[in-house]
Length: 245
Ligand code: IPE
Ligand code: MG
Image (tube, rainbow, N blue to C red; front, side):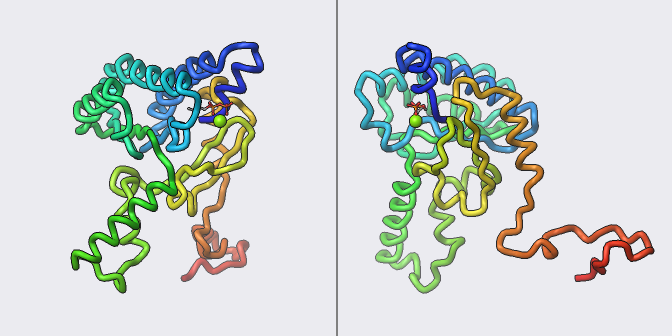
């Protein structure tokens, strides 16, 4: 979710106003995602690096998050949404942590969609934490370094426990960067970039991103022929491919 500040500045408004409008987009997009049947939606709401913004802006973002958690509680619970987080949420101030922990617990049995908030999140930080924990396990004799596989590393990432594999990453505001988001998880994710600033990103923009995604061929390092479903055999040999594997 990028571009709140620029959206506001372009209109002669304080950055805070951009964040307020950004929160409205969050509401709209969560609703639209739930309606569209998306299994899991992660919102990169606050990065590990965002703590270094001016204190007044950090304070306002925390207040906005607290307000969102309180105001959206009923809608989240009423729509079968399970709220989870990735990141170092221990760093969040108590007045934000309290409604967050409460809503996570209250929504834990919901099954219709996962809404994951990336809070105090950094992809490098998460990978570093995983390395730290793997080293600890190795020293304690619980993990054999020779046995460490891609799956092992994955099992040390919270995202793998909480979320299905990442299919699509949407970045707003015309920036073409990952910016320390899901570094591991984006390995084979499809990337969608839009010039729209986050406060102006709405339902149609989410649908456009999904449409873009639906047109991609995901090969995961294989060839087109390997991943394409075999052509229906009409008997006239039109496709030229046998469809046999
Ligand atoms: C995204 O908008 C919101 C957060 C990162 C919290 P920005 O605040 O990054 O907006 P720009 O990039 O300054 O326009
Ligand atoms: Mg930004």
